[in-house]
Image (cartoon, rainbow, N blue to C red):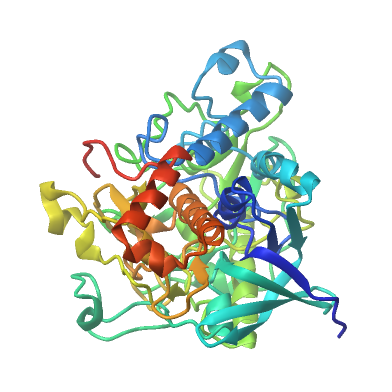
Length: 537
């Protein structure tokens, strides 16, 4: 093992996912030097290396996100208008949805998001204010009392670098920096006695975490055979059926997340789509799996340009249930990562060989993996899709009764005087490693409290992603793309604000005048701190 010379920066952001990118942009706009470290080769997390199109609330085209997140969304559309041979009708669409997927009004390819993110960061890299270290994961942290003074990251070749910073932001997908730095944190399902949440269990279940998934993209070539070799674990997954599942996992039948009743989906490549409703308040969008997360729709492009759509397989059938990634040994983590890969490959092999067809036949051998879309050799996404992270023990913890429509009703979500943004999504918890089925219930449009970004003790580490002060339950609506972006952007803005004004985060939050000054700065920078009068779903 070798060690490079130490690096020094104003703000170190560990994790270059959605929150990490937004945090970097906020700090850089305020003139600070930034280093971002990222485990994978692509920045962007959910949007890129995990290959998940944005899950968003139904008002996203009008309001309910930060200005920079809207610039990202506009940038994706401009990317397609600039470089792709769209039809005249598609090009005229102000709300262009490149994939015409039903999960989102902006279903797009991972590389499109990557291009826009790289473009947004490019000026700061050229100016020397930003340094990005990919292929690095955190392995150690130095602390001095209630401060983190440095973080050591390791490359794939074992080379280590220690980075000193005035502020450290944890934007990792699993909150990996928290145990390294001794930051008090929660893991898995909290007990009802701790949170008072109606949906919480009587005892804490740290290893009961939302399933993660290994996403992949496919196209369909009629008349061709692209069947992959039978995966090593195919026999296991072919027969696997969770106790609470209505059929074997490798099928088209799974629970309806909102009713838990068995629901058999359709899957027919290139079947006529009809009108696309990308509004999960009206239609979850998951009834037809080809259309659900389609990221490239051939009908959007000039005739003859593309032989096939591209759709992303991120379905209930590839949610990995045997165990979590956080809070387990390295051997267990490796086993579960490989198990998730095998499950996804088994799902593909089943689709190619056994899936029921409308004509009475079985299998779609023309399904072909698109490794070029994913930036990988095997066609699976570069990284697993992570839904739940370790979470800081925060100065403010958002609990179910703060935003559940069942509890709050017409009163709406609890307001926060220290709001640094807004978000909205149902409390959407996927089946868990502890054997729970979906928890998917209505919530109200909510605010993001500054106190949820601040640990109870450590003074210069901020949560910048899914590791903020939520619970296992409220993570279900704080974990999606625009909220994670807003959380990261607020963390980056706060770190820069504290450096400029020689303040600590506690001093900003704890003083009414200082908090108002910071919030005014956020508003001027395009943050929305409160919702107009809208209802939840």
